[in-house]
Image (cartoon, rainbow, N blue to C red; front, side, top):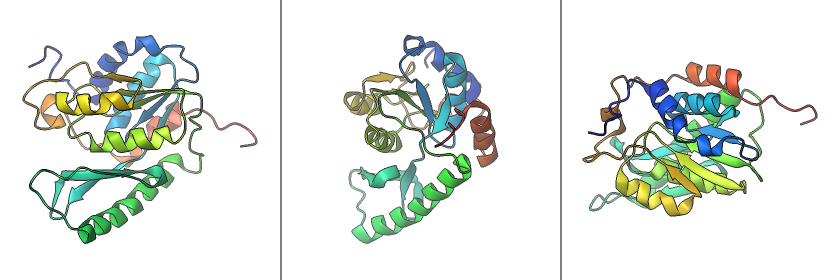
Amino acid sequence: MHSDLPYRDRREAGQRLAAHLEFLRGAPGLLVLGLPRGGVPVAAEVARALAAPLDVLVVRKLGYPGHEEYAMGAIGPGGVRVLRPLPGVPVTDEDVARVVLREQDELLRREQAYRAGRPAPVLASRTVVLVDDGLATGSTLEAAILSARHGTPQRLCVAVPVGARSSCDHLRPLVDDLVCPAMPEPFHAVSQFYREFPQTADEEVQDLLRELAAPVQAGR
Protein backbone atom coordinates (compact mmCIF):
# COMPACT_ATOMS: atom_id res chain seq x y z
CA MET A 1 0.00 0.00 0.00
CA HIS A 2 1.09 3.59 -0.66
CA SER A 3 3.18 4.99 2.20
CA ASP A 4 0.58 7.72 2.97
CA LEU A 5 -2.20 5.16 3.35
CA PRO A 6 -4.46 4.61 5.08
CA TYR A 7 -5.40 8.18 5.98
CA ARG A 8 -6.60 8.65 9.54
CA ASP A 9 -9.75 10.49 8.43
CA ARG A 10 -11.00 12.97 5.86
CA ARG A 11 -9.42 15.90 7.66
CA GLU A 12 -5.94 14.40 7.49
CA ALA A 13 -6.53 13.42 3.87
CA GLY A 14 -7.44 17.02 3.05
CA GLN A 15 -4.36 18.37 4.79
CA ARG A 16 -2.09 16.02 2.87
CA LEU A 17 -3.88 16.74 -0.37
CA ALA A 18 -3.48 20.48 0.16
CA ALA A 19 0.30 20.10 0.18
CA HIS A 20 0.09 18.86 -3.42
CA LEU A 21 -1.98 21.88 -4.47
CA GLU A 22 0.42 24.67 -3.48
CA PHE A 23 0.93 25.42 -7.18
CA LEU A 24 -2.59 26.89 -7.17
CA ARG A 25 -1.99 29.35 -4.32
CA GLY A 26 -2.87 32.86 -5.47
CA ALA A 27 -4.46 31.65 -8.73
CA PRO A 28 -7.07 34.04 -10.19
CA GLY A 29 -10.41 33.74 -8.40
CA LEU A 30 -9.41 30.52 -6.63
CA LEU A 31 -12.49 28.60 -5.44
CA VAL A 32 -12.67 25.16 -3.81
CA LEU A 33 -15.83 23.12 -4.44
CA GLY A 34 -16.42 20.04 -2.30
CA LEU A 35 -18.65 17.20 -3.47
CA PRO A 36 -21.18 16.53 -0.68
CA ARG A 37 -21.16 15.02 1.55
CA GLY A 38 -17.86 13.21 2.13
CA GLY A 39 -15.82 15.48 -0.10
CA VAL A 40 -16.62 18.61 1.88
CA PRO A 41 -14.45 17.93 4.97
CA VAL A 42 -11.54 17.19 2.62
CA ALA A 43 -12.24 20.32 0.60
CA ALA A 44 -12.45 22.42 3.77
CA GLU A 45 -8.84 21.57 4.64
CA VAL A 46 -7.75 22.45 1.11
CA ALA A 47 -9.61 25.76 1.29
CA ARG A 48 -8.04 26.60 4.65
CA ALA A 49 -4.54 25.78 3.46
CA LEU A 50 -4.85 27.80 0.26
CA ALA A 51 -6.77 30.69 1.85
CA ALA A 52 -9.60 30.14 -0.65
CA PRO A 53 -13.39 30.21 -0.22
CA LEU A 54 -15.29 26.94 0.01
CA ASP A 55 -18.56 26.01 -1.65
CA VAL A 56 -20.23 22.84 -2.88
CA LEU A 57 -21.11 21.29 -6.20
CA VAL A 58 -23.90 18.82 -5.54
CA VAL A 59 -23.89 15.68 -7.69
CA ARG A 60 -25.72 12.41 -7.13
CA LYS A 61 -24.73 8.85 -7.92
CA LEU A 62 -27.24 6.78 -9.88
CA GLY A 63 -27.31 3.39 -8.20
CA TYR A 64 -28.64 0.22 -9.77
CA PRO A 65 -32.19 -0.53 -8.59
CA GLY A 66 -31.92 -2.96 -5.70
CA HIS A 67 -28.12 -2.60 -5.63
CA GLU A 68 -27.69 1.10 -4.99
CA GLU A 69 -24.07 0.67 -3.87
CA TYR A 70 -23.11 0.00 -7.51
CA ALA A 71 -23.07 3.08 -9.71
CA MET A 72 -24.49 3.09 -13.20
CA GLY A 73 -23.87 6.82 -13.59
CA ALA A 74 -24.45 10.19 -11.97
CA ILE A 75 -26.29 13.47 -12.39
CA GLY A 76 -25.30 17.07 -11.71
CA PRO A 77 -26.74 20.58 -11.87
CA GLY A 78 -27.88 21.94 -15.20
CA GLY A 79 -29.34 18.67 -16.41
CA VAL A 80 -25.97 16.91 -16.59
CA ARG A 81 -26.24 13.13 -16.79
CA VAL A 82 -23.43 10.59 -17.04
CA LEU A 83 -24.33 6.96 -17.74
CA ARG A 84 -21.58 4.36 -17.39
CA PRO A 85 -23.31 1.02 -16.72
CA LEU A 86 -21.16 -1.87 -15.60
CA PRO A 87 -20.25 -4.35 -18.35
CA GLY A 88 -22.74 -7.18 -18.50
CA VAL A 89 -25.18 -5.54 -16.05
CA PRO A 90 -28.16 -4.38 -18.13
CA VAL A 91 -30.55 -1.66 -17.01
CA THR A 92 -33.75 -0.51 -18.70
CA ASP A 93 -34.57 3.06 -19.73
CA GLU A 94 -37.50 2.96 -17.31
CA ASP A 95 -35.23 2.01 -14.41
CA VAL A 96 -32.84 4.83 -15.28
CA ALA A 97 -35.69 7.35 -15.47
CA ARG A 98 -37.03 6.34 -12.03
CA VAL A 99 -33.61 6.57 -10.40
CA VAL A 100 -32.86 9.93 -12.07
CA LEU A 101 -36.17 11.38 -10.85
CA ARG A 102 -35.48 10.30 -7.26
CA GLU A 103 -31.91 11.58 -7.26
CA GLN A 104 -32.88 14.90 -8.83
CA ASP A 105 -35.19 15.50 -5.87
CA GLU A 106 -32.35 14.74 -3.45
CA LEU A 107 -29.93 16.95 -5.41
CA LEU A 108 -32.31 19.90 -5.11
CA ARG A 109 -32.91 19.21 -1.42
CA ARG A 110 -29.20 19.25 -0.68
CA GLU A 111 -28.54 22.41 -2.68
CA GLN A 112 -31.27 24.21 -0.74
CA ALA A 113 -30.15 22.81 2.62
CA TYR A 114 -26.48 23.62 2.16
CA ARG A 115 -26.78 27.06 0.62
CA ALA A 116 -29.59 28.29 2.87
CA GLY A 117 -30.51 31.05 0.43
CA ARG A 118 -26.97 31.84 -0.74
CA PRO A 119 -26.64 31.95 -4.53
CA ALA A 120 -24.51 29.41 -6.32
CA PRO A 121 -20.99 30.76 -6.86
CA VAL A 122 -20.04 32.33 -10.17
CA LEU A 123 -17.38 30.17 -11.86
CA ALA A 124 -16.64 32.29 -14.93
CA SER A 125 -12.97 33.29 -15.26
CA ARG A 126 -12.08 31.60 -11.96
CA THR A 127 -9.71 28.81 -10.96
CA VAL A 128 -11.98 26.06 -9.67
CA VAL A 129 -10.84 23.00 -7.69
CA LEU A 130 -13.29 20.08 -7.42
CA VAL A 131 -12.54 17.96 -4.34
CA ASP A 132 -13.90 14.58 -3.24
CA ASP A 133 -12.72 12.10 -0.61
CA GLY A 134 -11.73 9.58 -3.26
CA LEU A 135 -12.21 8.48 -6.84
CA ALA A 136 -13.64 5.02 -7.51
CA THR A 137 -15.69 4.65 -10.70
CA GLY A 138 -15.44 8.36 -11.51
CA SER A 139 -19.09 8.85 -12.47
CA THR A 140 -19.89 11.50 -9.86
CA LEU A 141 -16.73 13.48 -10.51
CA GLU A 142 -17.33 13.30 -14.25
CA ALA A 143 -20.81 14.77 -13.70
CA ALA A 144 -19.25 17.47 -11.51
CA ILE A 145 -16.70 18.30 -14.20
CA LEU A 146 -19.38 18.64 -16.88
CA SER A 147 -21.53 20.81 -14.59
CA ALA A 148 -18.59 23.05 -13.68
CA ARG A 149 -17.65 23.45 -17.35
CA HIS A 150 -21.06 25.04 -17.93
CA GLY A 151 -19.85 27.88 -15.70
CA THR A 152 -16.84 28.53 -17.99
CA PRO A 153 -14.06 28.61 -15.38
CA GLN A 154 -10.65 29.79 -16.52
CA ARG A 155 -8.98 26.69 -15.06
CA LEU A 156 -10.57 23.51 -13.75
CA CYS A 157 -8.77 21.13 -11.43
CA VAL A 158 -9.84 17.84 -9.82
CA ALA A 159 -8.16 16.88 -6.55
CA VAL A 160 -8.68 13.69 -4.55
CA PRO A 161 -6.53 12.11 -1.84
CA VAL A 162 -6.79 8.62 -3.32
CA GLY A 163 -8.16 7.16 -6.53
CA ALA A 164 -8.33 4.24 -8.90
CA ARG A 165 -5.68 4.69 -11.59
CA SER A 166 -8.07 3.78 -14.43
CA SER A 167 -10.62 6.39 -13.29
CA CYS A 168 -7.92 9.05 -12.95
CA ASP A 169 -6.75 8.26 -16.47
CA HIS A 170 -10.32 8.56 -17.75
CA LEU A 171 -10.93 11.97 -16.17
CA ARG A 172 -7.51 13.55 -16.76
CA PRO A 173 -8.26 14.72 -20.34
CA LEU A 174 -11.44 16.46 -19.13
CA VAL A 175 -9.68 18.94 -16.81
CA ASP A 176 -6.68 21.22 -16.76
CA ASP A 177 -5.14 19.51 -13.72
CA LEU A 178 -5.86 16.24 -11.95
CA VAL A 179 -4.11 15.77 -8.61
CA CYS A 180 -4.26 12.36 -6.92
CA PRO A 181 -1.25 11.63 -4.71
CA ALA A 182 -2.15 7.96 -4.12
CA MET A 183 -3.35 5.43 -6.72
CA PRO A 184 -3.05 2.07 -4.97
CA GLU A 185 -3.83 -1.26 -6.59
CA PRO A 186 -6.00 -3.18 -6.17
CA PHE A 187 -8.66 -0.53 -5.61
CA HIS A 188 -12.05 -1.79 -4.43
CA ALA A 189 -13.59 1.10 -2.48
CA VAL A 190 -12.57 4.52 -1.18
CA SER A 191 -13.33 3.48 2.40
CA GLN A 192 -10.53 0.88 2.44
CA PHE A 193 -7.94 3.69 2.45
CA TYR A 194 -9.25 5.44 5.59
CA ARG A 195 -9.02 4.24 9.19
CA GLU A 196 -12.07 6.35 10.09
CA PHE A 197 -14.72 6.79 7.38
CA PRO A 198 -18.05 7.72 9.00
CA GLN A 199 -20.89 9.13 6.95
CA THR A 200 -20.68 12.92 6.80
CA ALA A 201 -23.80 14.59 8.16
CA ASP A 202 -25.67 17.49 6.55
CA GLU A 203 -24.95 19.53 9.68
CA GLU A 204 -21.18 19.16 9.24
CA VAL A 205 -21.42 20.35 5.64
CA GLN A 206 -23.53 23.33 6.71
CA ASP A 207 -21.11 24.23 9.52
CA LEU A 208 -18.09 24.15 7.20
CA LEU A 209 -19.85 26.31 4.63
CA ARG A 210 -20.85 28.86 7.26
CA GLU A 211 -17.20 29.04 8.31
CA LEU A 212 -15.47 29.06 4.93
CA ALA A 213 -17.90 30.17 2.21
CA ALA A 214 -17.32 33.55 0.60
CA PRO A 215 -19.64 36.27 1.94
CA VAL A 216 -22.55 37.21 -0.29
CA GLN A 217 -21.84 40.51 -2.00
CA ALA A 218 -24.30 43.34 -1.49
CA GLY A 219 -26.72 43.78 -4.35
CA ARG A 220 -26.56 40.19 -5.51
